[in-house]
Amino acid sequence: MNPLSLLLQGMALGISAASSPGPFQAFLINQTLILGFRRSAGIAFAPLIADIPIVLTILLLLERLPEGWLRWINLAGGLWLLYLTWKLWSVWRVRRALEEAPDANPGEGVSSTPRPRWASGLAHGILMNALSPGPYTFWTLVNGPILISALRQGWGLGVTFLLGFYGALTLGFLSIAALFHQARRLGPDVVRRLTFLSILILALFAGYLLKNALWG
Image (cartoon, rainbow, N blue to C red; front, side, top):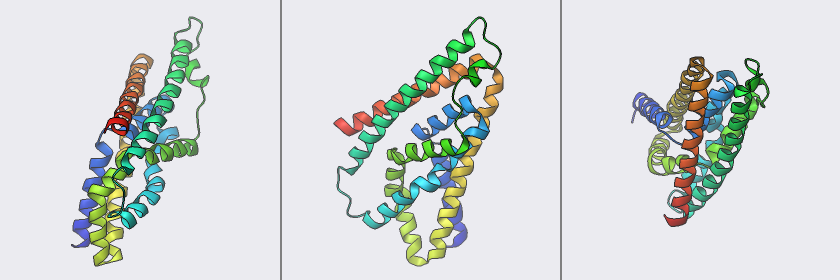
């Protein structure tokens, strides 16, 4: 292994992870459509923090984890997604009612609902990432073995791989947020439908995780 190949490998995996549909990506899209790029951009940085205990745990226990550990992650993630879906659905209904009110002023729906700060988006993103099974399976099956192999040849190689992966992952999520921020210019009706679609996707992922947790 050489530093350049590890850097490119990490970047390729980071781009792949960012572009793969999942609950984290759906949550990022939903918050971008509602709050805009500036207030939702913090979510893109959540894996940089949330993945630290995941990576350390998997590196230390990759060969010793019990077989049923992923089911508990699926169960916790599914329940959290159900709660988040209900919360986002409630906000969506309030916004729709405000926007469709006959005497509503332009932008009233946006200003009448809570607009969390950048740090709040980061905190929600960290919790979402921690309760998603994706990082656990990805690091167990893909990134973990690569990183262990690189670290055995030198810490510098391991750091190079991590820089490539998380640099591409974060830029990928920021690009997705920027893309859907531009979609807000298509008008309130389009944004409302896209927001509803992202909520529906979260609900489907919640059902999928609960199915895996309960029935395998």
